[in-house]
Amino acid sequence: MNLENLKIFAVKARRAVNMAALPVVAMVVVAVTLNYAISAFFLSDAEEKIKNILLSHRGLHQYIQKVMHPAFYKAREQGEISQDFYAPEIFSSSFVVRVDHGFYNEELKKAGLPEIYYKLASNNPRNPVNKADEFESSLIKMFNENSEISEFKKVVNIDGKKYLYFAIPFLETSNACIRCHGKREDAPQGLQALYPGQGGFNEKAGVYRAIESIRVPVSDEISTAFILTCSLSVGIIAMFMLFFFNRRLKRTVDKKTYSLEAEVVERKKKEDDLEKKNAELERFAYTVSHDLKSPIITIKGFTGALEKDLLKGNYERMAGDLKRVSDAADRMNDLLCDLLEISTVGRVVNTSEAVDMNLLVEDVLAQLEGPLRNSDIKVTVQSDLPPLFCDRQRMCEVVQNLVENAINYMGDQVDPHILFGVREESGVKVYFVQDNGIGIDEKYHENVFGLFNKLDAKSSGTGIGLALVKRIIEVHGGRVWVESDGVGKGSRFCFTVGRNF
Image 1 (cartoon, one colour):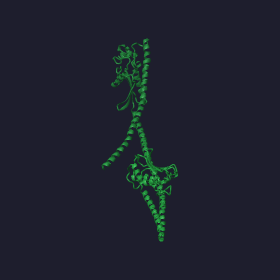
Image 2 (spheres, rainbow, N blue to C red; image 1 turned 90 degrees about the horizontal axis):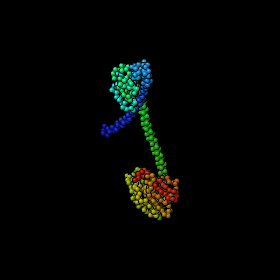
Image 3 (cartoon, rainbow, N blue to C red; image 1 turned 60 degrees about the horizontal axis):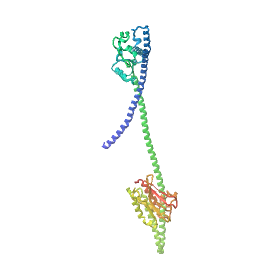
Image 4 (cartoon, rainbow, N blue to C red; image 1 turned 180 degrees about the horizontal axis):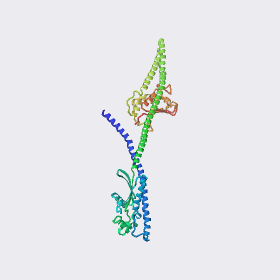
């Protein structure tokens, strides 16, 4: 494998990798997005359940502190309860809620459901079971330092299983709470006797002294989210790939269809061109046979006349017969030369170049000085003609034939005039030869470019000139047409080429 083949292989390989990378990247993006959305849905559902439990606990705290405590203090003031009485089972909201949650877990267990971990964590608890660890202490600090934060949630790994951990600050310590959580010596005697240490005492009002936290297992939900993600991702990617390849297949089919349609159009165009060529060939063969037959008949006829004149010794008449034979031979020669000329257009073409049209027109007019002077025709050439990119020799033939055509069909104009100029249409330069001659009826505007077509059969020339002009212009990628307002109103022969400056 040479270096060039290696480069081609590398380009194809890189293109294949790029094409393969697109579906892979798309699959990764879709999978990550789906997994995030589905996981977020399941976690949001679990979070909603946790919130409901915590708010239920908070409602129980509120009931104990706002209903049970006032009733207890009222009964104590009325002497119905001893001043030293204290029982956490009916007085401590944290104790009641913790025990209540324990019963709740027992019911979950009976129902075959996973237990839900709950903890009211404090830096200064009465019961060691409520002692906050380092992480819980940081949360208590966070809630106290930023009152705008009302909750904390995080997915944690414990013993290889995933849990959703959710925490909210406990009720803010109020002045009523200070009765039991202020100085130890101010607390009820029963409370002091039950808790001999400083745990739970010396708290301050206006702060959060604890957090409530719940931890629920979410491994099954995350696994389900993963399975759903994989299933949906495969389905979506399959649909994406199907869409992608369907689009690609459609583009390929469209391209093939367009190619076939273009091929059909091109073939139809070639068939139409071929039909035109065949029709033109038929007309050509008929015209050639007809026009060549005329001088042959003339030559044959006057040859017989010469033979008779020779036998009779009529030498004076022989000179006239010989002239007519010579004229017929000259006409045949002209016809054959023109036929040879038009047959070579499109096959023998010189190299195109930037041609100064000012000099070209000047050269052509110099060659036609005699016919122009004899017909007393005035010629005007527009100044500063733009150059053309063309075959100079062929373009000389175009200009010469157009000017000669204007001379031949000038008619009996008192002030005959020919103008060579250029105009611009839609950014394309249009060159023209304009005369004030006999003009052309609109129905003959196309016919004048046919082989041997002459508006005036008595006019000079073979009738090939305009057909030759049309062939040369078409070979240059341009077009030629005639403009005339009718008989007696002059003509303007216009042409363009494929490339202008």
